Length: 78
Image (cartoon, rainbow, N blue to C red; front, side, top):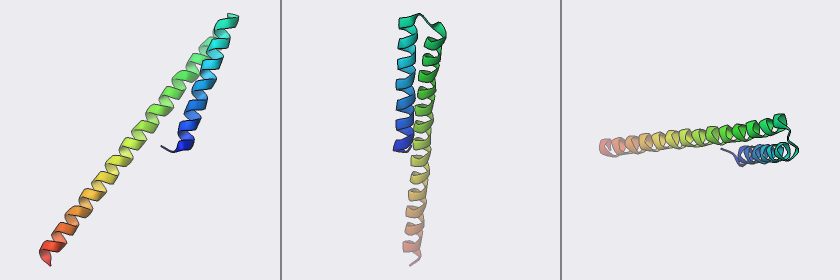
């Protein structure tokens, strides 16, 4: 995942923590719940980024393995 996406997730998490803390301090349960929801959203953003990175690594691995196999076949044919 791009660094921009990681920064957005971190910012969302910080926003959530601040809202949850403010809600806790003021006794505003709705604000606290909104903050907790933002934190969950940030967790989901990070999980999606991790999956995206894993998929990219898998695709790169398949490409490399395919290229290696093709090169081996070409060498044997030469």
